[in-house]
Amino acid sequence: MVITESRNPKSAELDTMSAVEIVRLMNEEDKGVAHAVELVLDDVARAVELVVKGISAGGRLIYAGAGTSGRLAVLDAAECMPTFGTPPEMVQVLMAGGQAALTRSQEGVEDDYDGGFAEARALGLTPNDVVVGLSASGSANYVRGVIDCARAAGAATVAVACNPKSVLGDIADVYIAPIVGPEVVMGSSRLKAGTAQKMILNMISTASMVKLGRVYKDLMIELKPSNKKLTGRMKRIVAVGAEVDIDEATRLLELADGNIRLAVVMGETGLGPEAAAQRLAAVGNDVRKAIETKC
Image (cartoon, rainbow, N blue to C red; front, side, top):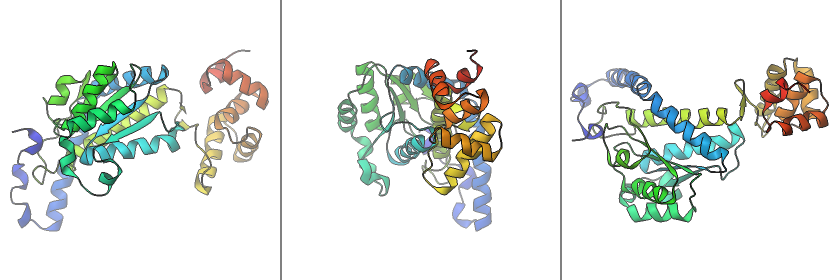
């Protein structure tokens, strides 16, 4: 029996425990998740390198998953646009069962190999795309269909599962397998396995976008002022990035028409909007290179 379907002896009498005993046990079990992820960081980094290479060449990051794994992928992809200013097509998700499966479980659709293959083919995958398939057990046929289609198209493939050996792991270019052990509720892989997958998704998307130049220092330089909170955050980002006070950051943002990259370069170099924009364009829109370039 695979680990994700095995029984956890620590929770064998779970129904007899008090509420505080249950949550303490769950908390204790969760402590091992970060360590399990730590053991596969080299594999996560390999996946990041594939994503950076692919997107730099005009490709896309495509997540594929079923059930909890798919919902976690949707969550990660949805956050890329507001956090990193990605265009909608750059990070996409194939979810078994489609949008309806986001809010109502449709367990049978994870077995649909042909559906996964067809949905992946409809995306027009290319060798520059990177497909990351997620399945707690590593056996979801829908995800296997997506990965097989990606391989046929010459795209790079990554599998994320919580068993040391799996069908998806056997066919992907990179296999990320944090072994979190049996769940507190037997087979409920939305728990530790889901937490591990979310941590790995955080790392893949964040590290990739940092290496793609969508972060300067630790600052979200693609942020847009979609609400009052973010407008204030933009000013603080410019203040930190350009090493100026809030009033000067506000002035720079106004001159830069809300473009954080441009405002930071203006503040650090003393250039006007047009000259700073030219400097950025000359170095591929890289803020650090624009600031450090001697012109």
